[in-house]
Amino acid sequence: MKTKKYLIAFAIFGGMLFLAQAANQYNLDGQQTAKIEKKPRPVPTHG
Image 1 (spheres, rainbow, N blue to C red):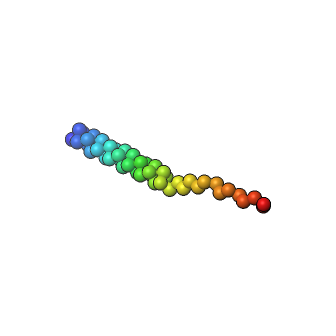
Image 2: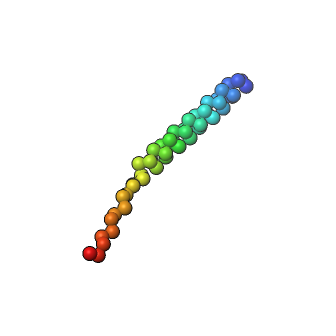
Image 3: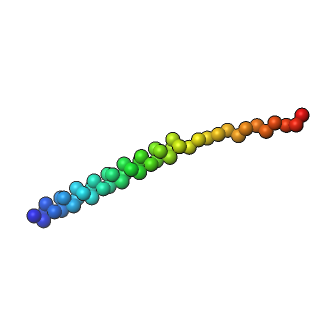
């Protein structure tokens, strides 16, 4: 009975770690695609 409780607790803890890692990876991917890099525009001279 004790072993069964430990196995269930271990399975829940492992699932939580897996979900946290997957969520973190998803957020990192979202941050990479959200960046927009713009080149500076040349300022026209009065000429």
